[in-house]
Length: 87
Image (cartoon, rainbow, N blue to C red):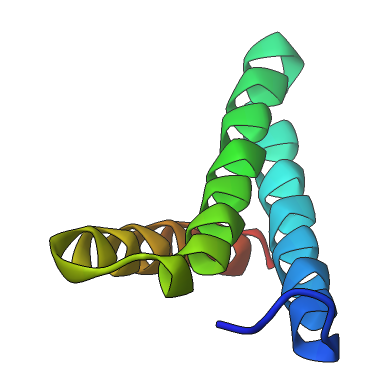
């Protein structure tokens, strides 16, 4: 999405941090207990995977590039879907 060290890179981290926080809120409130915390942790890891994929997509070529793009879009869609369900 962006080069490292730029403001859009910082904004990406803030955006995915907010999505992760909303995901935690969703699962801790709806599931509750230890399982809510476990599922919330998995949701945070999913948002982290999305950031990882977006950071590495410009360093890939060929079919690996396509897989990275699909992974980034998939994890982003998952984070957005859960975050909107939280609101």
